[in-house]
Each structure stands twice: as C-alpha cells, then as structure tokens.
Length: 312
Image 1 (cartoon, rainbow, N blue to C red):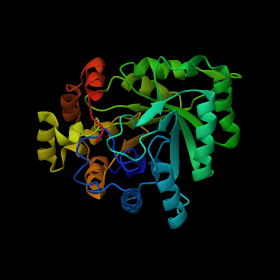
Image 2: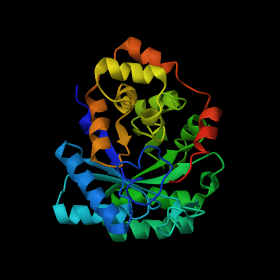
Image 3: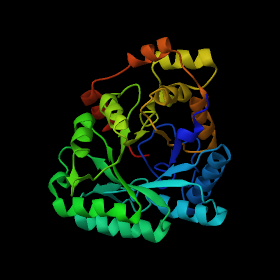
Image 4: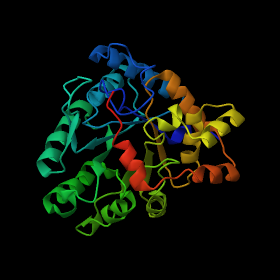
C-alpha cells in the first residue's frame, strides 16, 4: 500500500533559519542564508513532487516559507499542488538563529486581516485551506463574533477554513471549535492536530471529526524529530525488522489511522524526505500497532517536554 497521496510536506523547518525540530542540522546548510534555504526548499519540493506528493503546508510564521513556495510554484508551473497555510503567529525572528523570540501569537481580527492579505499577496488564489494557527482553549477566537463571521466569509471565496491545535487539551479544543457556527453553518471544516505514538490523545476527537466529513490532518507526526533521532526501543526494533529507519515506523502508525486524511512531514532535506516517505509505503501489523500504542504518554508530560525544546 502506498499512501503518498495522503502526504503533505510542511515547510516549518525550511522557511526560517531555526526551529525546535531535533535532528535537522545534518541536512540544513551550514550558513542558513535566505538564498541557501530557498534553494534547499525548492530541492525538497522538487523531489517531493517527483515522488507524487501534491500537498504543501505553510504558515505566516514559517519565516519566508510562503515566499519560497510562491517562487517555486511560479517557476515550475505546477497547477495541481494543494496549498494550505495558517495565520495567527507572526514571525519576528529577523532571520536569526539566536533570536530571543521567534514568533508571536495573536488570534485577533486585525491579525487575521493583515495576514490573509499577506498570504494572498504572495500566493494569490492557490491557497485552498486557511487555518487558525495553534488554537487552544484560552484563545479569544471562541467568543469573537466579528472574527468568526469574517472567517466564515472565506467560504464565498472558495477557501476552506480550518484550525490547528496544540497543547494537552487538543481533544476538547477540537470538539469545541467544530461546534462554532455562523448563520447556522459551521465555521471550520478542517482540523490539523498533533498526533504521534507518544501523543495520541486527540485520536478519538479526530476520528469523530472525520466521520462528520471534516478534513483531518495529522501534524508533528515525529514528535518534532524525537521519534527519528532518539526513538523508544520498540520503534527502533520494528525499524530493524522492516529494514527502514525509525521515522518510517513512527509515520506508518499515522498512516494506519483511518481518520487521517493527510499526514504531514517536515523534512529538513531530501534524505529525510525519502526516509519519511518510506513510512507511507510501510504497513504495520495489528500486533505491531498495539505495541506502539503502549508508548503513549500523558498529554501533560508530552507537552511539558516539548516546551523545553530549543530553537536551533
């Protein structure tokens, strides 16, 4: 079974000089200049496209990711690439790896208007899905009726509206957000959530969303690189059995979830891309999946550890 059509390449690592993913240094340029990162982004996108990947995920906070993607699309002329982007975080890192603050979050009507205009200026009408970036229970969006009305209005432009989630309360956030309506119609018809063998707590909510026709995308499927660089014994053992790298095993668990319409990859280069794509072709047995299910951590533990990861 080949799940390549379910793959989306995310540009969180490639669109800026620093991110919290571990294990990226070996593939990233020694000097992470704008030109060097643009060239690497285009190389990765070329290889992904050649492999059959037709989805790319970006965000306003991913440095120059939208700009890099726009240039690549214009140069290659690909008209069959499905593009999703996100608003809510602003990139403030000034292209420095040692920036004290790399991004700032704000879920407000003014931020949405400004960032949607920026996204449209760069990518025109190729964005088919625009998402609230990192929705959490404390977001003011839930009670901001003018903002919700303007998000819902994107439907008239043919743009799907969704949200991504993070934090230990993903499941309740998903359910609450999918209940939001404007004029009797749901505001959101897509969700992008963290799901991996260490943090599967959103799984049931995502399965329910999928059953209701919501587009479901699984992100941070390698736990920000942890499952590739320092995997639990069980992941490494299965990698040996199947003659693949640990990241492929971890990703295969995501592809095994019937509710996961799209599985996001975040490669730092072509070698990572190819080892990730092996996960789209790997089929794990039910017993193997049950073994990996035992790796789950308490959400509070998982997210506390994630918060300690350094930008590098």
